[in-house]
Amino acid sequence: MEPDDYPLAAPRSAPAADPRALCTPDAHHGADDHGTGTPGPQGSNGSHGAEQPDHPADAAGTRPKETPAPDNTAAGTTGATAGAADGTAGATANTGATAGPAAGAPGGSGTPGTLCVACRKGAVGRDGHCEHCGHAQPRERDHVESELAGAVAAVTDRGLRHHRNEDAFALCETALPDGTPAVAAVVCDGVSSATRPDEASAAAAAAARESLPAALRSGTPVRQALHDALVAAGTAVTTLSGVDGTDYRYGEPRPHQNAPACTIVSALLSGDELTVGWIGDSRVYWVPDDRTAPARLTEDDSWAAQMVAGGLLTEREAYADPRAHAITGWLGADAYELAPHIATFLPDRPGVVIVCTDGLWNYAESAGEMALAVPADARTRPLHGAQALVGYALDGGGHDNVTVAVLPFSGAPSGAAEPAGEATA
Image (cartoon, rainbow, N blue to C red; front, top):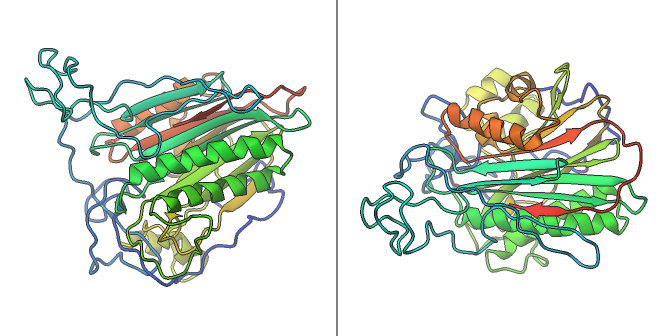
């Protein structure tokens, strides 16, 4: 694991929330993503099966992981890329782009009557399958790319073993009241052991995108604005369970077991500051151009991380345990608490910030491995960098949904910029 401190940029202050207690009441049993009994990557969130109360990973306050069943569609098939959909918010010209349908929207594959993308002979039926060869058509959300004028870019892909994409992302670019430019990426990973994980990630990303730029423009301090955006995302996911997320108290008896759930991670560049916030095990990495001292900037909300942090197990012992990658923090009505981790750093040289789900970091877990996977020109070509990293994960096996955002950092800006745009996936 990477050290807690960031060697190139000292934290401005401690994280906003202390790590959770090692044992929390009210276990939520479900499968997160990555196999505990098969070789290959281990991490979180993806294709999950039914609850297994007798599974060794069923520890209180955690969501265990399972190996997903092979996809029924042809391996390697991805959907068409969805471009940015422009929009405006208020009087300020803030454009938006969404990858995949909004929360609650149907994610059907193919349009009835269109030509099959596989055989190019049959028409697509109402069930999304070709009436000639039976091939399932790619869904809009299977593969999506978005970029905001070189300031930030992101790509999400279904992967090779999932039947749908349960990840989502949001991008936004705006300015603080003093004119300092601010750009952010939010990445969400649906917990597949829960119901409607794809809706959970989409709702969380959309809520964060709506909250963050507005707060920054109004003068809310950066750390507080990011904290509030993650809380807004949690409220949106909780509301999917049919309860009023604004009045819901985490830790109370939960009538909505196996509620929609997801993880969330965000990185925000404002001037010479980098602020990160997260709940769950999606991660942020810093990779400088010269590749000296890359670093992982987040600490997983996972069973293994808590065992190591509490001094109960060595790192080797913790990660050899079947419970290692069970997550202990997530968004949803059955989450024990909603306590975002927030930290601020000061990068001291040009580089890129990588925000990703475990669909990528399972294949490049350490900061050194991630630095080797990031293309040399990622800072000047962030969309190409995100595409290359998604391809890296797919070449490694595509075990999970993969989502990657790349934020270039060129150093402290020489002047202020006007408000720009926003995007959501």
